[in-house]
Length: 80
Image 1 (tube, rainbow, N blue to C red):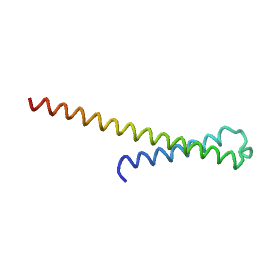
Image 2 (image 1 turned 60 degrees about the vertical axis):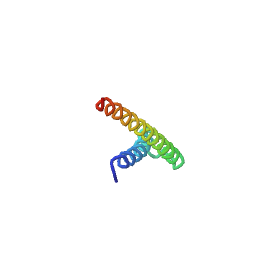
Image 3 (image 1 turned 30 degrees about the vertical axis):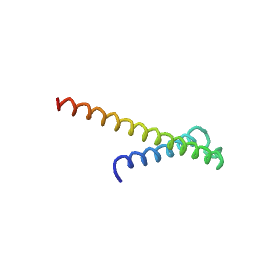
Image 4 (image 1 turned 90 degrees about the horizontal axis):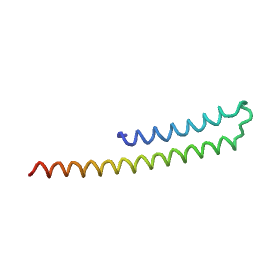
């Protein structure tokens, strides 16, 4: 895996773990957590991680375009 894929995988996994941990720690008694509630939190965590991943990809793409534009501008100034 290259760096961007590693970051995306880490983001997704950490989002899932964070959502599950929140579901477990919010309820004072572990037995009060039903399978349905845990499933809802896991789905929410996965959706949240997916949105975060998409936002990261968009920002990375914009940063690459800006860097390419800046380096193109610097190259044209060097040619003068």
